[in-house]
Image 1: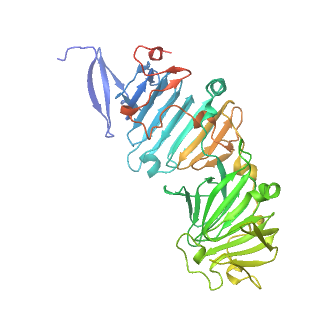
Image 2 (image 1 turned 120 degrees about the vertical axis):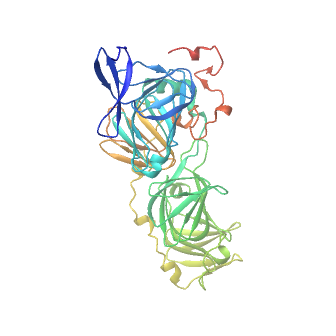
Image 3 (image 1 turned 90 degrees about the vertical axis):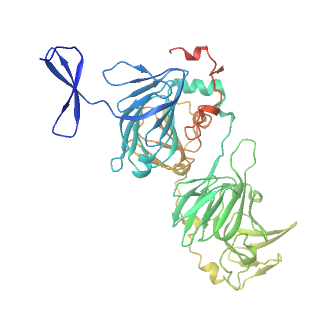
Amino acid sequence: MMSFMSGVRTLLCVSRPVCLRAVLLGGLTLPVLPAAADVGEVVHAQGITTAQKPGAPARFITKGDVISEGDVLTTSGRGYAVIGMKDGARMTLRPDTVFAIDSYAHDRGEENAVMRLLRGGFRAVTGLIGKRNPGGVRIQAAGATIGIRGTEFDARICGAECKQEVAERNTGGQDDRVIVARVVQMEGTASAGLPGQGERALAVGAPLYEGETVRTRDRSQAVIGFRDQSRVSLNAVSALQIEQYSHRVAGREDSAVLRLLRGGLRAFTGLIGKTQPRNVRFTTSVATIGIRGTGMDLSCQGSCAEEPGEAPPPDGDGLAIHTWDGTVVFLRGEEELPVEIGQSALIDRNGQLKPYLSLPEFLRAFASPRPDKVDVNWQELFGVDATGDEPALYITVRDGRVILSAVQSVELNPGDSAQLLEGSSIPQRLSNIPAILRNDPFPSPSRFDERNSRVQTLFGTQTGRPGQAICEMQ
């Protein structure tokens, strides 16, 4: 006869291949639901971090502790935590953050994750779930859904504390690259990148930066819109470098210098060309072109091209120009040689200007659209300015793609940011990365190394020293 023992546990196996734990209490068998699946662990914790399941007390967690489905993670007001998930995803939870892991399935064929940001913010890089099942990772925050497409991004819910942070910590002091242009329209494939660095694939809406080179592939074309409402259409197999560009930047004069490395483009100048036309130039290896309020086509082939390309047409070895609005000037030292509206000319490898008697066929055959005929919603393209001191959900994307959805949606590419203001259901694309995200002092999870983690300074307090107040419960 079995003796009574309080707390003795057995296993009850049901018809499904699932075993339920049971507790024998005075002859009464009480089933207990299976333990929640372990989905990750704490990689690093500074300050106080807790995890809590529904209906259970909170437990302190530190490096190496397990994270499970159903856990609600909370960081203290001066601490942060880096967590690693079983599919390779990583997240840095900022101070005073509450983050819930509702479900997290990473087995092949079942990849899906649903999480919630209830307070605070995080920096994240997704893992196999986001790679195997694009759209399978969803994070709910501030009345919106953050849809992930294999990415690295930051998100933060801001209240009054962000306004105070902006005011106290001069978060605008470190300046990231400014978005100077975006892709308005595209067919085929194109890429962009800085010289000597890797290139990223472009899509409609993708941001472009000063110093970058945009390249189109075979049977491809792209229309680019700049901040001053200039527009450039790139032909197939063309390369254009944004050598210099500034528009309404503090301490810099408005200017635009674009270098055609190979191929063809069609350009329609904007506000800089109207107000300071001598500050707008198109450069090539054989000539520099100035504008006087202009629409033009340029072809840089053969001796003009700085990168390998197709063989030039018989009458197009050099820089060919056709002006269809305003005036183009060939700058040769102090001399300005005009190419008026309706005229065409070739500048050869020796810097000689040779007029065409009529528009040559290879210029007539340009496939990319005349940029002045392309409609652009400039406010939607570049969005609104934001410092991050208004109550809102803020997001910035560093890699991949994010879709921020409420009543309406906005799609974000690398370098893009958006906000959802408190009380609003319409996300807004931002023209800049808010300072509170741009200068976040907490480590990116993709580059976090505990052995080399730098000491953080928060609100005037250096963290990481034994015995200091940061280690107290907040």
